[in-house]
Image (cartoon, rainbow, N blue to C red; front, side):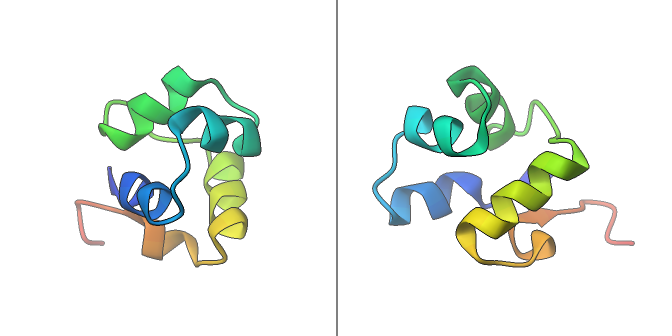
Length: 66
C-alpha cells in the first residue's frame, strides 16, 4: 500500500522516532510503513489520520484502486 506518511512527517519536521512515539509504535515500524514494506493495522491507520487531521484515504492509498 502506498502512503504519504514520509511527506506528512517531513512537512512537520518530525523524525521517525517522534512519529513513532506519537503513534505508540517503534521507529522501525514507521520506517517499514513509509517504505511500503508493512501495511498498518486499521486502528493504527485511524490513529495516524487523527494525528495528521486527515481522512485515512488521504494518507494511505490502495493500489488496487477499488
